[in-house]
Image (cartoon, rainbow, N blue to C red; front, top):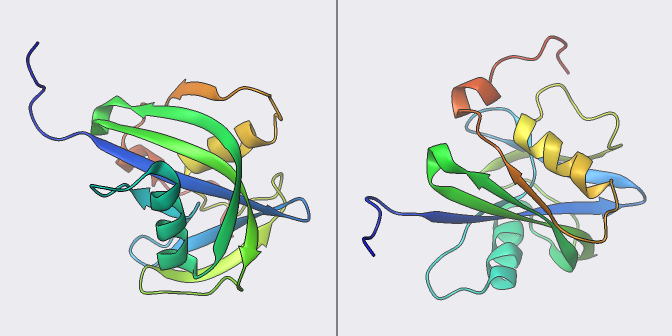
Length: 151
């Protein structure tokens, strides 16, 4: 078996729910709202990576409830694992990566929410007992097209 060229990335993201609302973080680099998370590092378990990313981005501890979905992003050689979580300790705050943190009703997300993250949030609220397996094939440029209504 031959190894594919380049590296393969595993991402972990948290859908943090409190009182029926979803926590989103506005990224400083692109100005779009997204779920807290990022790439796993060597030597980490999935839950360690998720907790680290959430701590780094928004400064809270989380309780991981369940896997929502496994999302293949073949155009980026990436697989993303997204988990339903609850805040366990701390108050969400801004960071070097995040300019704003707020809770939103799942049906009233801001216009500039990354489409892939919007889809993952919708999947979490389907309340399926099993994880969803979905391909997310759109390019980053497509995802960051301005929505028709702004927030």
